[in-house]
Image (cartoon, rainbow, N blue to C red; front, side, top):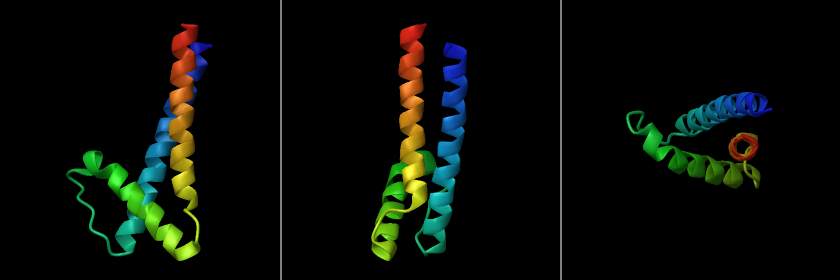
Length: 86
């Protein structure tokens, strides 16, 4: 059972990375500068910029923001349940 949860956690992390990269592409196309050398440190800043931009444009956050939040929460849940079951 913990192997299945580990697999789900890995897949959700990969999907979270894809979501983050799409958000970074979005803010780059809107004219915001992105420091690719420090992207690991500044990723939450860029996600916040995406949130603000999409909320300003559409009145609600974009779908990729929700995708990122959901996948990171799923990863956390799988890791916690996997640790408890192990």
